Amino acid sequence: MDRAQLILLGLPLFLFCSDLFNLFTPPPPKPQPHRPHQPPHIPHQHRPNAIIPETLDFPSQETSGLGGAIGYGNTVEINFCVSCSYKGTAVTMKKMLETAFPGLDVILANYPPPAPKRLLAKVVPVVQMGVIGMIVAGDRILPMIGITNPPAWFHSLRANRFGSMASTWLIGNFLQSYLQSSGAFEVHCNGEPVFSKLKEGRFPGEIELRDLISKTLTRPSILTGSSY
Image (tube, rainbow, N blue to C red; front, side, top):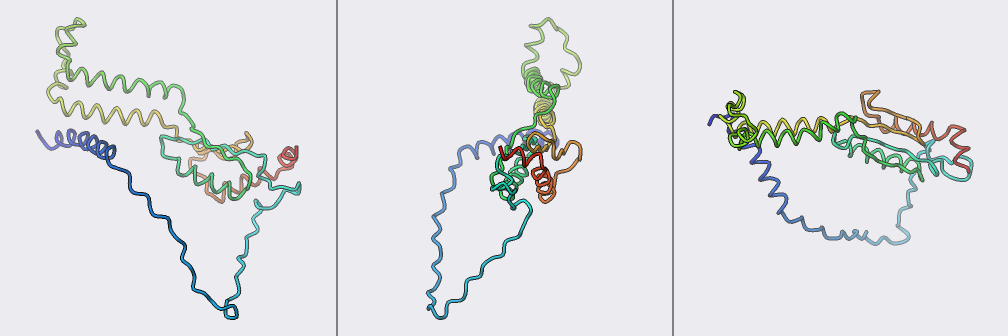
């Protein structure tokens, strides 16, 4: 068995063993509650004056003139690709918007790929298991369906069973991950498109997204609708 076959055989075994190890590993102990450090007692006459922090006057923190913050009664939807590992970015944007616009309802949802890709993503595991089954027991399956002379590719797969099964497993998982991804990060404010990664080809910056939401919320039509 050459080096390539060892790598193709060892990689699935390594991933399988790591999954078993993570499954049976006990959770880490909970940290002890942190007790706040008591500052040393300072006599009243020597106690320093308290420093009042200055707050930045952002436009998003201003009230709309209707007696409440402009975030109340408005909704922002962030539809992102879950299989692309965009969840961390979406959660960061959600926290930023909720902090910048108090009362704003930020909803996170998955943006699915097109229907043909979703259908193919369901077919790939079936084909994957079928190929592995043919590699393992094809000599008994083919005569049952009336094929007495197997094709040449079948003998090639059977000549290196472990390498063929490992390659089928890796290629199938790659194709399934690709077909399930949409690459989307779409932001809507009250149903109105604000930013689209599919069109721009990039993620929005935090300041950029905050300014876009602020401009949308401060429109006269939005402010009038939030007063009802």
